[in-house]
Length: 449
Image (cartoon, rainbow, N blue to C red; front, side, top):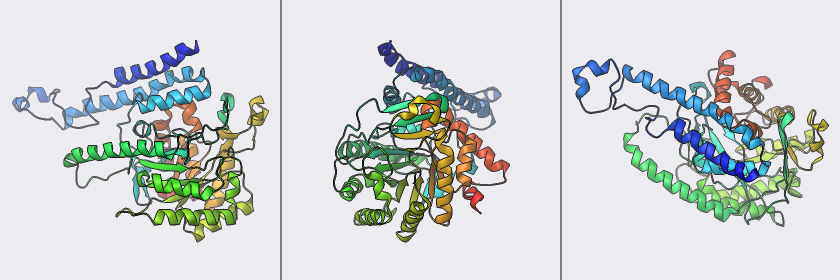
């Protein structure tokens, strides 16, 4: 049965994409070579060329509806993934995205959720957290789903298998996952080759399409084309020099990144969280910043450097991290990683006894509380990425009001699939409009004022 399911799921995905999306639809939307009524009755319609204007409206709108239906249709596949082992399901999902067997979002994002951070234009603030595409296999496919940014990794210098399997456990009733993967990674060389090939292909595509682009058009995205690419760096389990590991990652991968993340908060690598201490973090960030800044950069300058922290921190720990971030002018913080605690209702589930980091709905309150505290401690001077338990536009909005400039999904996406992305974006836009905010940036930290 398991073998048949492993074959059936990707075939179903491919069927949905090829049949429902098709290959002949115009991109939403250029001109059309067809002549819909009433244009067909005009003698000028015999002229060769692309038709624009009112007759195109119904055609392009119909395609938009079809794309929306395609995203909704992916919900039909979710039950098949739920029958599979969590890591097998994850592997299939990454493979599907890498092969383009996912819907492609061609509808424009609501204008009130677009924003600029670190000089980069985000079409929307909804990102995919690190851990999903650990080895940068599916960047283009994941961005095509409509994420404003995708973060790959964590990437370690040397390939490592991670912890023994099984190491991912579903708590479906609670909308949660426990994992103890332990930085399973193909290593920076393999990831660099993959990102380099993708980068070269995009440059060729941009060159060939640049002549058709409007000069006044606002360009969203960065080194990953239509979206922003973050690279999350980790250390090897057996490494005795954490700083050297992160520096190696910077030297090898920063040229492909729109931003870099130092992951010092995974609970599944022994001793890693000790790097969040005031002195340890300060020394580490200084060395990594120096490694980044000694490299040759063009007009865009070096990629911003962020640190991802744990939710299981004391008030004193948070104060120390905030002090380091402000003193060293860190470009941002990601709040937060998974938790080793087991908040209700997860604590009542027998699976909660598994060792590892908990993510999902049960993490929302804890991570949002830490986010708000850090926004206050940093006085709103540092962009924060809110991560942990988001499964709706309203929850994304709560993160923004608590101080997040950007937000990230993972567990809810694992359960809900591609249909969740347009839903969250639409709900977030409605929340902003409801409360009288004209943009995301106006709402950032509203609950801390």
